[in-house]
Amino acid sequence: MEIQRGLGRGLGALFPSQAGEGDPSTIGAAPTERELSVTMAPTDLGVVIQDVIYAGLDALLAAMPLDLCAYLHLAEATGPQLYLRTPDLSSMDANECFALFGALRDALDANDEDDSSLEVRGFHALRMNTPGARSRGLHVVGRRGDELDERERELAGRLSHALGAATHSLEAVGPPSGEPTLRLSVEVVEGGPQADISLEAGGETRTGRGTAESPFEAVARAVLDAFRGEFQLVHAGLQDVGGERVALVVVEDVHAERGLGSALGQDPLQATAAAALEAVGRVRDASARVERERRMGASPASP
Image 1 (cartoon, rainbow, N blue to C red):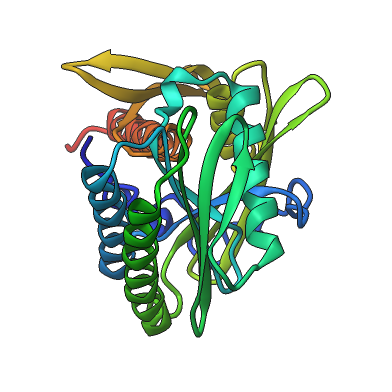
Image 2: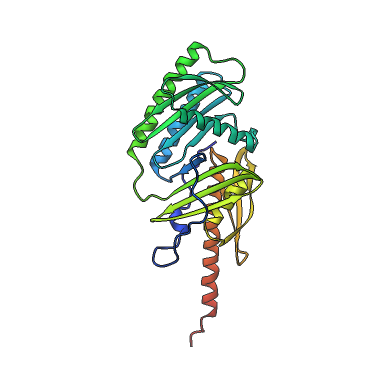
């Protein structure tokens, strides 16, 4: 699946200008230390880092049969970001997904320096920690049946440490200051998935929270919550289109003006957030166009 490159519409375009159009919203609470986050930065460097990570996971899968092939990346000032090649997220329910994320987060927190065996959610796995100047990461590979043999363990270790070093070297370069970013964290709470989101652009930060039975709907609601009730969610979910899993989000404003956002992505939750932001942008564009037409129609005719 093609990696979603950035958020399409810049976050700065969705925020009011700083010239007196309202104070930043601070809805919701800051994510706790135990939450799992996905950070998106629409920069060329961020895309390169993603490409390196996914290419590395592809190389591991090509080198040996695996039922689990994952990388957890933790950069400065962000939450851990999970990259998963197998199992496919679409084959897992929400509880299974977050249980796996939590187990990998615990393994990352353990910060073991040496490669070691790991039993995680039914997988006989090998974990490999890699440190960097401004980030650290954890590769985890394994199978449900047979354990990796000695040759596979050695090869997985060499590949993972080389890929980790490359990723951390890129991360150390750092994105340009002031770039718009989106931070998303999702956890399972009593009653279902809860998503928290933080949008930063142009020195302004907005936060939002959403809960729903579906994690995708929770993410979309969190994005809309960041806009202080300006929009309502009509639909959020994944659809199969041309063999691809596409996140589709429909929102409307107080005037019932609707907008559709769509996004492809390796991570369906990330894609849902991107689709929600695109839908917000479309509604704002449509509303602005209607308002311009209304004003032109109300103008007195020329003599």
